[in-house]
Image (cartoon, rainbow, N blue to C red; front, side, top):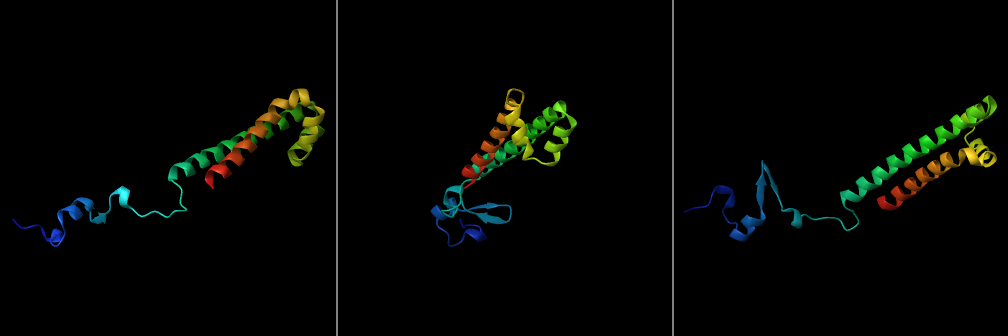
Length: 120
């Protein structure tokens, strides 16, 4: 019995190592060459999740501080809205009311940092 045309000259071990996927010839996953500096795609996905979580937490924490500043007065609200560094002064002067929002903002920054560490 003869082999089909594409298999001529290929040993049985090589036939098992090679397989067709549609019209492409692919190596099994274990034998695919990878670059030593490339991490798995899983760590990139986790880093992306931490990055987006950091964005969301920072946005919500900053928005919460702005809402608290508006409740204190229109000048504080406008100041915190248009001059974000003023939010730090507001938090320092109104610690009891704004500490939860500040810690939410810090959690967002921690998530940013973690995404950078994971993604490297």
